[in-house]
Length: 293
Image 1 (cartoon, rainbow, N blue to C red):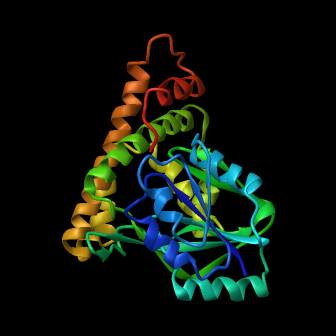
Image 2 (spheres, one colour):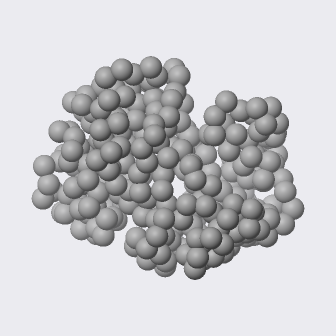
Image 3 (cartoon, rainbow, N blue to C red):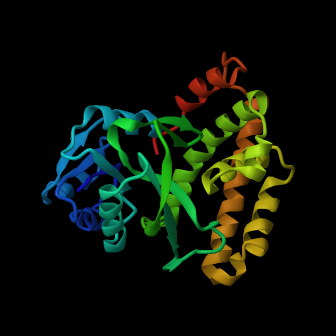
């Protein structure tokens, strides 16, 4: 058996369905970032533990959770509130643990948007490290999200999980991505100033994860990124075959890229008063001005 962590912040719409999907495990822990809605109240109606911790960043929240919140089992699975644990995925996790060859396993998401699976333009399969031995993994921050640090080898599961990316409405999606774009702009400035393109990983990476991350480093340096992303997703990946939802998804992703570019320009040309131009110091100044996602 394995334990399941569920990360939440103002998830009253999704939390019940998420918990119900996770109750296949005998140990479920909701880690809440001081929600101001009914998330904790709803979660308390289920046989789960609820702990709260002030959110600093995605990487720090996950690392704190793994280090400070004890669970019953050596193996854990991280579930977001707008995701679901399927029966097929749960059974594969159990089977994998029994004969584990690695300390962690990546799982592919199925992005659900406007009532359908956006398979093509989301670059499916996109993998996230979700099942792992608790003491072998921690997380660092990268842009608006996090990246895992693993002590040991990793593998991939066949089963997937649904991710209801706009289950709370498009307004919530836009609000969240406005915040995300600020963090991505900060990371973009850092990468442009200090990072490099990992060409070997881009062409000869051992996994989809390694190749995709190298591609992201390259994409930060491409001109007309919003237009390139739309054309790539809609025409080359086949987003046009995802119908109306596919067109809306590709348009929103191009809009998101444009927000990032605008904020990169803002950081470069309109620094906050008394804010040094160092990316690390810019991050401190900018983050202090934005709301938490």
